[in-house]
Length: 408
Ligand SMILES: [Fe+2]
Image 1 (spheres, rainbow, N blue to C red):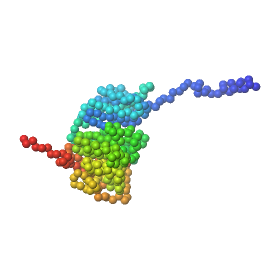
Image 2 (cartoon, protein in one colour):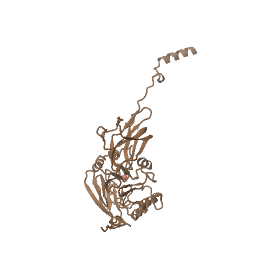
Image 3 (tube, rainbow, N blue to C red):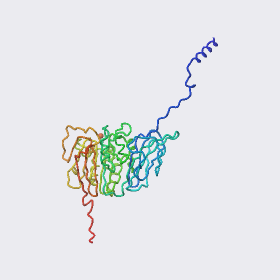
Image 4 (tube, rainbow, N blue to C red):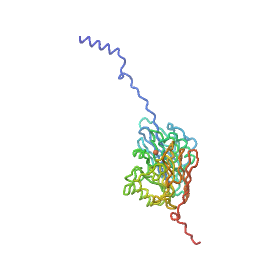
């Protein structure tokens, strides 16, 4: 009986199709390596810049760069990512194995155009990906005049191409983003701005929709704020980004509050601009959060010129304010600049409050600020270039003492 069973089993096995173990092993072609986000610029100074990008898989990275505008024959900007071409750049700075890369180029020449590209290479199979050639210009040590842009709340608008094109046309030296910028990879809301961010650094304040993890991954700025709050100098101006989600830290005695006071007290720059997400004054939201009162008093004490803020998905600009009053001199101007969102929000019960100099809602918009010595002109315009607000500010004689006559 047992022999008969074995014979049946042998016949049955012989009639079975070949098993997987008997097949030749098949190798799945691996996904080509891609650069999934970036490159983009951070902390651009006269002699250095940080280049940030993310590859689809852990890879070795490098930034290849050289002085001068991109040469003809280099991959032109604006084309999609391409396989690694054999191009030789004058300098190369390596980044270790990782998905996320952050490389700081140092020893740059002030006021110089540089062309660059980033390269990621997988260890093992040698797959590589590179971005197209991009360029940036370092600022001079003390530019007397420069312009920067203001953008905010890009997290709700899926058709931001027009705003991005407007930014390219206006060609600011850098962009302040007042928060709620949207996920960089998952939702793709920042995708239209990729071309902008490769050429001009975009400095982000943390919005209520921007997680701490995401913000730290995004921002690459020096200082004790671990990317959540930071400041930088450009010419005769100090720019300070604060994290208004940190209500406790922003109250008197809080860690961020103490840092902010020290920044304002010790800065040598004449112009002081703060950018943050939650508004200290806004026409649209009724009463603002009293937990930020200590911050407001600090900004008034050290005579910050303008606070750029977001969150309310519309535009408004205050008169110069101090101690909750409109003042002729020494006041702070608060501008809510949430122009990156598509549908400007409707607040049916909003009415024009006493502190509002201009309010507006309509199309998506950007701001441009031209600083020229002791004068700053701030303009806000729609993506089509329609101007709807202009403000001129001047440093006071106390801030810029008149040059003494030499008597000769
Ligand atoms: Fe928002």
